[in-house]
Length: 111
Image (spheres, rainbow, N blue to C red):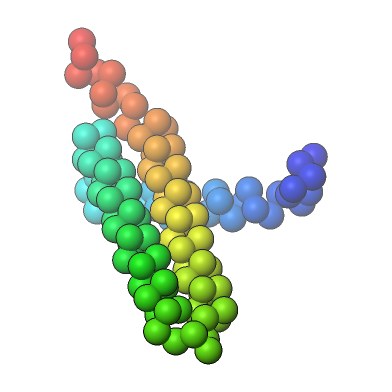
């Protein structure tokens, strides 16, 4: 029994997320290890770019609107945390897709 997830709800939700992403990747025709790794790189770049936009924008808005500073910083932090966590989880699912679905493709090319 996991104390952080005693009833397995989070684990079940992550499995649903993975299978939905897996289906989407298969439907998109990503059935090559190279394409999936390229997707990982693109996702990382987009996540970094998003954070590079959100953080300065939050700071500028907080400086321009000091009466709403607490709310703006809280929302900026919340959006940044959401973007980071979503990007991280998506990358984990794509890595799992590569390991489980595409690992046999790379092995057969080496021989």
